[in-house]
Length: 434
Ligand code: SAH
Ligand code: SF4
Ligand code: F3S
Image (cartoon, rainbow, N blue to C red; front, side):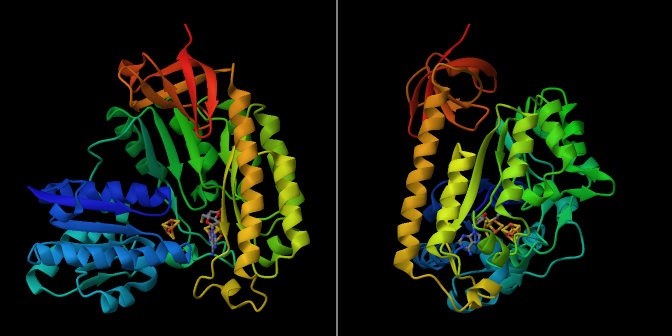
């Protein structure tokens, strides 16, 4: 047996890819470990979305180089994911301890790359977008959690002016529905009760005459699959049919991550989001019309080039209008090769920091208010794992909040009605409702 250590950065698609890489290496005798210094193979599955995320990789590689030396070189180091795709050649040049560099579209080739590196002893780089379908080459899953991820769509054609994804993940590609349905059935056989469909633009899913809505209807017919989610969606692709699925399919959870980035029309335009703030308000209104108990989350960027105080005020106004259950917010980060990075009117760091603080305090207050609005309600909870205390279990509400429940220790994998007794900053406490 050889030990495999995988460290994952970035989005859920990377989490999915990391699991698939582990599946792929299992037949070669690699078993997962959580101790990097004892690993025969280390994979860093990286993210290029912001500068900080990308920088982390080089510092992590410095540490790994020392571990590799301490083991007399008996450790293979692979860099996968979006940094590998964007700056593979630079990784090879800057860090000689790296053996393999593999992009998100080519990781199914890892076994041959490992053989090649072992045979030739040099660094092996694979970052072309290969002609064959990665998903056809991957082995079937061998384990699944109670809540599983399933990538249905990859890449992006939208080219928001701040974003690297169209370059690191390539153009939009939707997997064949039969392949997705087979994989979903397999995950359910392995114990999954909930599946989150993943894609950079998951609601743009399109394969022949299949749409995301049609896919959700087909998945909802799988016995034992109790909950469906999908992420991340673009406001422009919230079709009537998809909105209707929120009304018609009880399996589709009443929670939607719908990034807006900014509440200013001028900034949205400069970002090439191709919708206005009011378009977004209307889309949210329509989804809420289909599903009254819908809760929302979003992503925001502050300090995009040219963003004025007034633009930022418009973002705060939008947040107040919508009312989010949860959200992510980031300072704009200049990414090499993207149009916005070349804009002349960059916003100073201290202004970005102040705006981020103001936005986050508003979003935190909304998250707290949402948590408190759950107190006294009865919510369905899918139990995922034992809690820290004996007999306790932790599950997720329909709104993805962790819920801690005493006396639910043997209910892992099951869904129960839970009366919420207390909201904490990032979780809820509840009791089983009889
Ligand atoms: N496909 C998704 C977003 C993927 S990236 C969508 O269209 O919404 C996840 C989030 O990272 C984005 O929503 C955005 O808020 C943030 N992000 C992307 N590029 C960024 C950059 N250059 N600087 C700061 N945040 C960025
Ligand atoms: Fe990036 Fe925009 Fe595509 Fe989302 S839609 S992945 S933010 S380019
Ligand atoms: Fe990061 Fe790549 Fe995901 S850049 S956010 S890991 S698609």
